[in-house]
Length: 325
Image (spheres, rainbow, N blue to C red):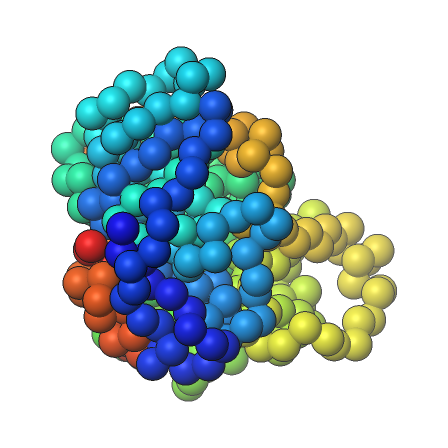
């Protein structure tokens, strides 16, 4: 098969389409003929050598895909050859075929094309497992999403509105904020021209938000704590603003705050299967109802993965960027 190989750690140009061996699949895995895969920020880190795949995972990038099941392991009971599916991967999506544990596979949602289905597994699993399964965002609460126009952000806006939360977002341009509002965001904050803490306080009568989904890490840490209401929860899923900062612990006691963090890729197959099952139960109905839609900015042929990475790193996109073998 053909796959995108990281020939050496570096810039987008190190991504090369090469002929490689077909993946071997285990007894509890299915082999998917990939119809489309989607970019995630983690792919760019892996390309630079900063985010190696977990032990035993495919060396090729790609954390989600959609496609058709080509073979099934002898212990697989849920899927059969020919099923149209999408899947959460530990790697290997940037290829014509990929092996994946059966518990990480989802049916293509009703009314969604096979190609667009690849835009859901990683964002749905990340958002549902963090702000819902762990931070317990509930109806009537306020969620602040940093990077509202990203793949994760555009999904989080829609699913949070679906469950009845109020949504604030930050983004870096008026165009991005307008798009976020078209998805249902109640308040848009341009982080380049406004102080998000001030806007949050202004919009909440000085109270703050209940949950924050944060991809920035250190650079936003203090301001995030300042933006939380009593019993507020900060969930960190990325470190685009650094990994180290000083902490004043007093707000934790004064406001009863919780700070959580989690990655998805390094979780065990059992843990991922649990998340996927919760996603199918809670998110797939929202997609079926048309309340959560795929947000796809652009698709590239697999051979143009380098160009797709350049687009992602320019941060000009809104939503997901796809690759099609």
